[in-house]
Length: 196
DNA sequence: ATTTTCAAT
Ligand SMILES: [Zn+2]
Image (cartoon, rainbow, N blue to C red; front, side):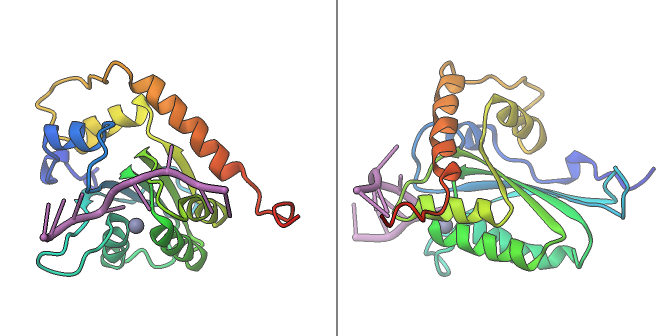
């Protein structure tokens, strides 16, 4: 009865940062919230949890680095070893081609990890479709953040001042549309037909 | 054939 990590121990995201970055505005930056759960054998309850959030790194002071790679940088510090674990990421943009391939490679090399990714918007720069498909084929679950995940993040990662999550009027409509678009991307089978 | 958006001028 002591392993629980009180939410107040963690640094929480500013309210405005969340609503602004995880809304429909197409910002030139990316936030990523993560939740890592480590399991022991067949136990239902995690023996350890790591939660937090980060932002991509701009040029100053160091080299630029996308949010997903910043996240991968953190993983060794948790000493996951070969322990069964689930990782859930909530990202304001979906992974780009390069990041998707890096995440896919991580999954292939760490078969004890299962990865779920929820994204607020689809980052549609060259190669993104192939990247997302490859990531899914490596075993990741990829989906759009609906009001359910938005609410979860609001309650888990945000300094919400005790306020209830209030979705934008058109959230469901927008996210349903994006979900359909994402479905089209990751349902596509690697094409023996496309070469005809 | 495939929607510029993880920024600094
Ligand atoms: Zn990237």
